[in-house]
Every structure is written in structure tokens, then in C-alpha cells.
Image 1 (spheres, one colour):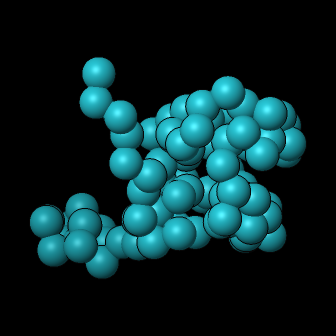
Image 2 (cartoon, rainbow, N blue to C red):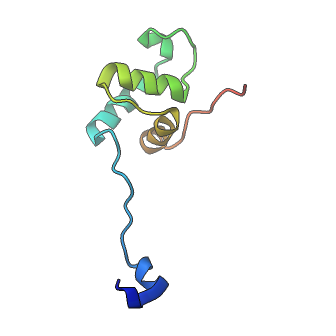
Length: 88
């Protein structure tokens, strides 16, 4: 929009946000790694996946650093739901 459009001009803009850090192929690889496996299958000591462990797995295997929050978003994207986090 132009400066004369006011707030209505803002609504017409597309705001796609930042592109995902992982390609679709890499995200599908993560999905395959997680479904039916535990962290112990990948050498971690914990019995259940956490966002932090998923981020570590991605860093170790793909060389991409994600925050636990970004790992949670990725999980929502590839699994349809985030991994529940343990309560402290």
C-alpha cells in the first residue's frame, strides 16, 4: 500500500516470516529419526525426547543449530504436535 492507505494498506502486505532453517527434506529426515525411536537409540542417556534433545540431534547430524523453541516449532510442523516438556 501507499502512505495514503493507512491501516488498510498494511493488511494487503504479505508477511511470510523467516523461512525455516531446515529444508523440507531435512525436516522429513528428523521426522523419520524420531518416530518409533528414543533418545537412547541415538546415544543420549534420557529415555524420552525433549525439544533440547531434538535440537542436539539436529546439530549433531545436520550441523544446524536450533533453539529448543525452534525445535518445538519444527516438531509441530513435522509431527503435528510438539513434544511435551518435563516439568521442573
